[in-house]
Length: 443
Image (cartoon, rainbow, N blue to C red; front, top):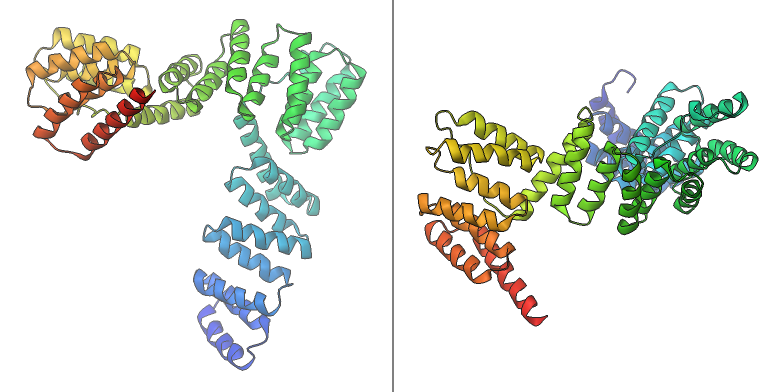
């Protein structure tokens, strides 16, 4: 094992386990050799055998937890790590528990275990780095408005305490920061900025009731401060009260037209399946902060979702002479979610490039994404006069008719599309129309 010759070491441990089958050490050591050779199933079998013989060995539990973690069995890994931590609280156990919670996006629990790992071994730079990285993730996920210490016109002592509390938060020590903010609020109970800072700290600790109380008091004291309204909205989003979140964000928008307000509105709209409204909100946020990459990612993800929800057959790119640049620009704007700008390019395509045979269908898809179903039907009908044997045009017009609840015409178009090119999405759309029409008649 010391030379790294794990294959021969396994052969020796095979002899030891055959002669001393009731000794857990040899199973555990052979499991370690298997793990070094990345034979995880064999390693898991040996570690389980060792634990069945002696279940209170923390190192064996820890090693089996690592195997479970590599195999993606996070629940089983977490159970082994927690047992190992109870028997022998060590920094590497707490670090691995934090990794599991981080993989499960349970960031507050991850922060707590990273902090425990740091207390066990304060000189370990890797633990400190992971904790700082996690707090940046939490801060980005929260999208809370904060109040910098430079904004306070109080004494230098207040600014010093605020900077110290913010440093505690960056290192994951939210409890210490909360005690500092609490002392400042007691000394200055009418300071709205201090209430916002304390509420932000409570939010990171997932104490949403206290956070909402602080943000509400700050909004009552300083209604001209958008941070109080935006942070209230973030708490309401966490506790799944979408109507209240939208109301708070609208009040914040009356004070400031900022990208984060539009982004949070987009999240709320998307969670309520108001996909086209969410698209407009994300695009507004992107116009105000084009350098933020996660806004591009959110908008692209939403547009894929809208395409899947719409059921349209997207028109493939065609390249007639002179129209190629216009088509590509409109298609890129559609992918980004800016359907209004894409529509202007499709208008150019329809007016100036009659040689593009699919121009009406492209513009009809754009109208459909904008929820202008009547105009979409007109364009699909114009397309069918040009290409009556194109199945996608019949299918897309059926989708537009279905959105307008003109079910008889939608079913007729689906039949026409099926005669040309029978596909599974036609059957699904027809079943959906039958089901919806039946429910509407019953109501």
